[in-house]
Each structure stands twice: as C-alpha cells, then as structure tokens.
Image (cartoon, rainbow, N blue to C red; front, side, top):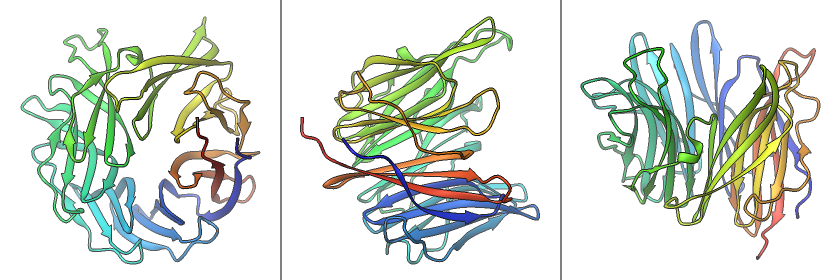
Length: 376
C-alpha cells in the first residue's frame, strides 16, 4: 500500500521567497520561485537531476518592478516557465522555453493578451507540440472578467490570439487547471452580473476540457456551485473536482466536508461523493494515480501555528480512506505544491515551505513517496 512520505532534501532560502512552483519529468525536478529586494522582484529557476537529492546552481530568470504567479510545465526535455511581469505601468505575460531539460533557456517572449486587460495568469501545461496557458482578464465591450487560454502548436515558439473559455456574459475567475497526457481540464467559478451590489449573485462552477489543443464542451458542475475553494486532479480518463464546504453553528466552526465530483469519461459525466472531517481545513490538494487517490489538506486551528499537512489514501475512488498521516511535522507550512508521475512505481513529489522557529529564514522541503501500481 506504500510507506510513509519522507523528506529527501531541503533548500535554504531567504524569508522573502514566495510564489514557488514545481514540475518533474523522470528524475528531473524543476523549481521556480520569486524574491523581493529593494522594491523589485526577481524570478529564479533551479533544477535537480537526481530526484531532489541535490540541486544545481540557481538561475536568475527575470527582474522587474513586479513579477507574480510563475508557473512551470515539462514534456520530455522541454521546460516552459511563465509569469506575469510589470515594468512601470506595462503589464505582460512572459514565457521562457528550454529544449535541453532546463540546462539552457531561450530569451523570454511576451504572449499577446489581445484586447483583454487587467489579467491574472494561471497554470501552463504542455504535451507534444501543444502549450496551453490559462489566465483571466477583462474582456469584451463590457470588460467582463473572463477565463482565457493562450495556445501554441509549435512548442511555444509562437502563440495564437487568446480564446475565450468562459461565458462572456458572466463574471468568471478562480480558475484551477489539471493535466493528464494530451488532455487539460480547466475549472472556474462564474457569477451573474448583479445590478444590486448587495444582491445575491448566484455562484456557478464550470469545467472545460482542452484535448490535443482543441476546446471541448463546457460542463456545469452543479453539485459544487457556491462551494470554495475548488481543487482539480486528473489521471488518464478520470477527472476529480473537489470543493471544501465549512459548517458553522452560531459562528462556531463545526466541521469540513470535502465534496468530490468524479468522472471516468474525461469530464463528460460526473458522480458525487463526500467526506466530512472535524477539523478546520485551510486548503485541499488531491492527487490521482492509476489506482490511488491521495487526499492532502492543511489544517487551520483558530489562527494558531503551525498549520500541519495531512494525507490519506483511497483505493476505491474516494469511497473509503485509510488513516490520515501527518507529514509536515512541527513546522509552519507556507504553501503546498504537488506533482506526480506514473512509472513502474507511482512517484509523488510535494514541495512546501516551512518557517523554522528562531532561525529567521525559510526552508523548502521536497517529500517523495513511492508505491507500486496496483492492478484491480
């Protein structure tokens, strides 16, 4: 069933480290993060070629007035890093590509946002020649907050004009993205444009696939309408979308319920299950492999530190779970980033920041779990 998750390395960083992301391919692990210094932001890249045991030299990717929301994707030896960059009043979406496994990178290029303004970028995915970047921005004559995709069919050399994923009559944001092979799934929240700012703007949740670079039909996930935050995971034909619902009694916290909508036909139809917990969850992070659902979460205890990270495993599509395992120890997680890949073993990487008491710096740990694939 797989042993405990154990730390395999740590990277000492300064207290201003933030926005870190990770992707892996084989034994290669790629790590990007930003740092603030003297009113400017720097974006760094680092690579491990031995599964996270050691890391090479840091590479300065960019330095600007503001750099936000970096994302990283890999396919074979191709590595793509995207970020949002502001210099003075000019805001751009940037991308850099490596074709040699992160040893060297081409010069950054700017991705066109068309007529959209005030954008916020999301995740980048890649498979074969296709590269897809999901982001939100103000679009159309009414400047509606919309979910967009910028797509490349030539390994990131050029990008077409952005395409609209969401309904332009709705205000849409809070997108989440997951990828399995050539399929990318985008889920987002939408609300009606309310004439009354104090009115009840109904919240809706939608999912849309991108298969081999082509947009699929939009699916409304009614069981998750109004439930936040939202997380998504996928593996092969299975797509899992989760929402976290908190229950209160006279403002006193009672419990959390994770609502799970699962599809086994690439997101065309879904069934719903749920699990209830007596702890205050701050975030949920599902990971799917061929046979196992890993359910990660962080706990928020009345604003007290630390906020531990837990994991439990299900081998029956979320119907039952084994006992939760606390994997962060006596640390203060500053964020969680997960990545998984299937080889003869399931290899799951977790990257999380930890604030070490009394040391005045931030550490980032990599944790790895191996589990033999189960045939059911």
